[in-house]
Image 1 (cartoon, helix red, strand yellow):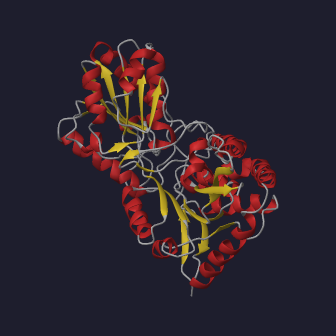
Image 2 (image 1 turned 135 degrees about the vertical axis):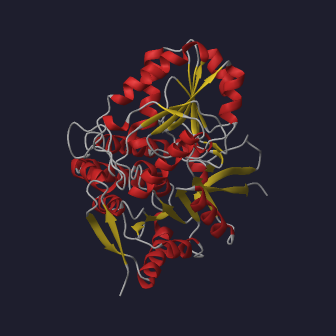
Length: 463
């Protein structure tokens, strides 16, 4: 009998969805179909690919309300906030569709008499996307749409926490008229996921998830010399200079730290604040956090939902307890959040001061509603502390001085540098990480470079 996955909703711990894992026969048929379909799809005109992808986005958005509600039940984000993921999916998808024409255009060097020469970006073949639960559509769309637009076939393995997301995207593309096999999905065990990566018909792996998961993907993919794109999370910092707009900085940093219950790869997990404004920033942050309403995400007044599962909440509780035992001071009274309870995924948000980099809360990924705040003397100290991390996905500065922002940003090891904002992806810009935050690139025209390979044409036309 085929084993099954059960998605336990963090809302009430009920079984929200159950699906059978793909057996080896289904896996074989799916991979074979993708490899066969790609041979025709790569010869499909770019205009036709774009038309199908646009229709798929239309079909997806038309079901947006129902899809948004499913997100809340599967991973716990407040229902008032999940429609934003539908809008984000649409924005990124439409941008990448529009960007394909220029991104995939032939590269032509200077003319040379008697020769026709150009570089063409050709599809890799079959792309295997492994997507996470925390932003189940926003992370997946980054590779799915450009892979298909570039002429690849794609197989999606979504998180066992959000299996409906794979099905909903597949339904939209099927309704749009995408040929069978070009985009398929599989519900897979960990062992079978690794087995698919090592299949000779898989040509690229796009993975978003943990560092441990990324090591598995890279190791498996390297056995066949195929490429992989890895987004592995972060410990993203924010630096608030003395010349910052304090009210804006407080609101933005707190939102960047606590939106989605802190379960964002590029969420703010540590804040460094100029000594001159430290006390005012902390007071403002405390007031902002205390305004949150923790509760059932399906209720309209909830602004902070549960974490995805109890074990994830317990991991954050452990970081808090360790930091407090080492001298950190908690500023938020959990009693102000009556929905919080040990043994459940409902966790009160927390701010910690008197922290340092010897504590896990300042050097290990938290991925929960917790923010450590440190006082800094100047830009140099802020730069040193921001760089004192194994991660480098995004970093942010809050200042009224653009020149200072550029000067500091040039010295911070990060994939994206923000001024006066955070926790955001612009589809026109490359989404990259450094250090343990990963490798490769999605989004922007540059993202297409990782889902294609250059093929040179050297034609001697005069004999």
